[in-house]
Image (cartoon, rainbow, N blue to C red; front, side, top):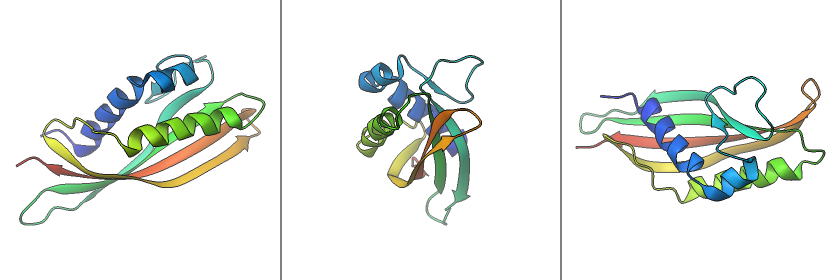
Length: 136
């Protein structure tokens, strides 16, 4: 059985990298687990993932908190806010293919944008809560 976090991340990659509007806004399929050297801005990276076991005697479930990081060198915050809105909207109605798991719930929990002085870039965060169960 594949770990729930790995299954969810794979499904998120497929859903987001396959979204034409998001790819157009980013200048390509630029969702990374870890950004490669010299990647052009804007782009999105996976951040922290926490998995909590919700197993009961009847079902194997997991709660997952995961964060997506958004990076932009635009002179205004609008670019990063627009990309974050695209991702939020795409995941709000997403039907995710999770192999041996099923997606029970996916909810946006937290949003933040700030200017990172060290990188001279805008940095945005979207934190989501997902609940998945193993298929019977």
